[in-house]
Image 1 (cartoon, rainbow, N blue to C red):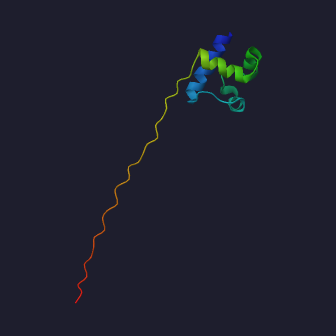
Image 2 (tube, rainbow, N blue to C red):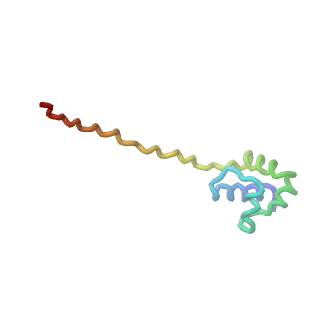
Image 3 (cartoon, rainbow, N blue to C red):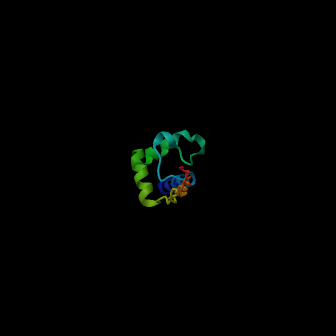
Length: 87
């Protein structure tokens, strides 16, 4: 597996998970679900930060940004004034 193939697989994995990048501990936690073993990536590129940097430049992950839904609050209802008969 070439370096470019490894990067493409990692980039596709990040896109499937919906993240732009992840730290090494999180990547390792996926175990056999990860497309390429972390030690192979670190051996090929030198460090995990370099792996992330090269993925960012060669195969950028485009994650759609979800805009927060703003709930519209109803205007407070006007209180009815009760007129008292004063005699």
